[in-house]
Image 1 (cartoon, rainbow, N blue to C red):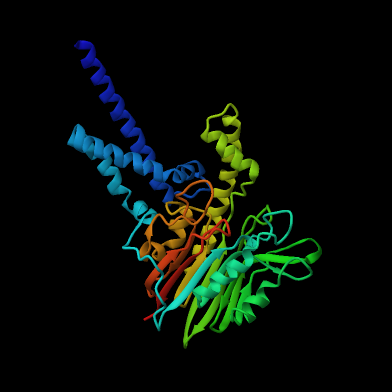
Image 2: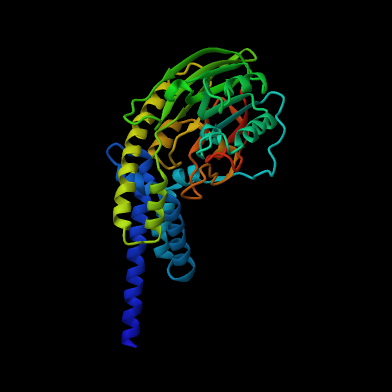
Length: 379
């Protein structure tokens, strides 16, 4: 009997200590939203496991509340209350509709999508995937008024690639556009970058190119002032620093998951890439926030932030703006198909003058990102 009592005492202490450790890590992951990753990159790593920490904290709360001690459940409850802003950014809890409804007469429909160069480069045989035509058909069917695309390319001197601007302008009927033209391929066959297409006239444009020591890691912040039925609004889109995972890096992730002998070396490789990406994204987020705060017009920002909703990047850029998915979506809203089912890294943010009517992400099997679309109106 004394041995059983000692075991119970040890088990209780162990669970309490485990609970405190998990709560501490959870609160650090929440603090990640306010700590600049250039100095606190290791806290940013915790942000990536925020969903797991949230589940554990909630699990401890339920365990203590219903099975042992209500007093001890206050440890987790305290953490969950502090973490409400992060939880709210991570999980949309609106009643979801099965279909994206027809656009209201006065609504503005906005689509953002990282198209991964239309999947035309995912095999050695260029343009072999056949996804480009399906992606274009999706855009035609949804009929947005404004399109923001990342990892877009425009072909010039190529027999294998298509002149996408001409097709979207003439076949999909978007006569106005602004293309960042960030990178040029060898032999000038094509250029890549972010692009804004509009059915409404563009009255002014601007481009801010980020400093980067590694090409193709990020794409510019571009702005287009658009005259929508006599009202000027500012549309921005950008593609922030990617971690630049290659096939070897995805293999390293599997090694870490399976705890193989080379897990330590694989972890070092992954952390090195994450540290660099977090730091550069933090600096880019500062640039984006400074720029969008200057807007004299109602503003919509679309883009691939390459960062999760509880990150410094997201919270700093969002500020007081609305997240269209949190406002009208439901669930986690995963937009990136690799690594984890919790990665929402593509966003539509608007200032509070817009009334968000509906928002949805579409799980399409073409790019490595899912498109996000929202309807809104400006009273």
